[in-house]
View 1: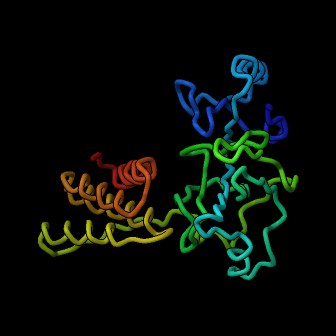
View 2: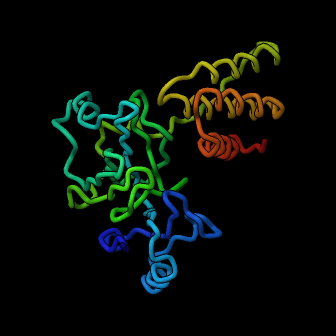
Length: 242
């Protein structure tokens, strides 16, 4: 079922097989052109739909891994989920969108089971889709306009600024310390620490350490796409390529 409500909100959408975007360009081929979307719906009549919208990020709650949005907002001194759209996922979690134009982390800082999804790096499964494991529908649970990101969430969401820091330690000592810090990272801080480590390695011209940082990040449970995003961001930040 084409998620017309999300199209009305300005989302570009595209067909999914389960949760996977299978067009040649992945989510970069998503579109707002309804004629194209209708042709895709006829060609792939049983597909799910993914969507992305510039300036919109999602909190992705996964209760199976400890995600709890009510607890999150209570910890920030808020009475509950703010007045914004809420989508119930096919696995029982929730997708909660907010408008935020800046860069975001991969996971919410300091809170297990809540990922962050943004148009810059990926897409979100749209309402009307069927979860490939449970067979349950993704559905709009609360149909409200998408609200701006609450200021209380900003420190947990925004990518931290990178400030180069000179050091006098021997290169081999510095590099082993950077890799060790990545390997010891936990929870929502893993993305920020991996980004920082890549920045330090590139700033020092230690491109041979990049693979060690990548392996250390993988060992913490970060996904390849998250690590690649950290590396690309570090390259842009430092102006140096790996």
